[in-house]
Length: 90
Figure 1 (cartoon, rainbow, N blue to C red):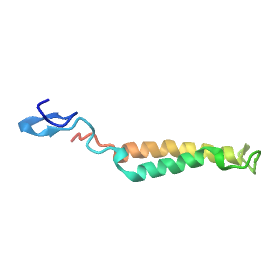
Figure 2 (spheres, helix red, strand yellow):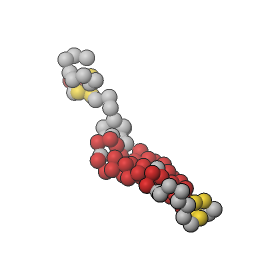
Figure 3 (tube, rainbow, N blue to C red):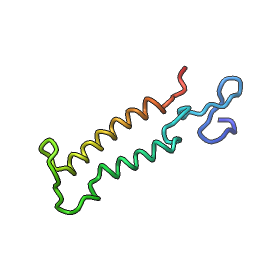
Figure 4 (cartoon, rainbow, N blue to C red):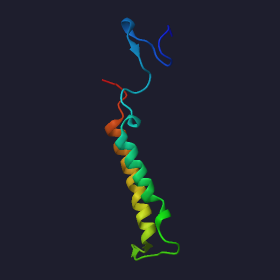
């Protein structure tokens, strides 16, 4: 490295090349907001102690909600990777 910012190297014709992807999901606030909301729903901390509620496919309501939120987290992660992650490949 020749005096450039830390983590960067000289590219062709003196241009600066950043080794990180051109666009990262962590730079988009909406990604973090959705993750926080989904984790808040997925962790059953807000249900009253001993609450069972109606059965959904044979599972207590809180379990069904937690499983649905976990599945949504997985789908959201896949969407974020495909939508926001750009490694700068042309």
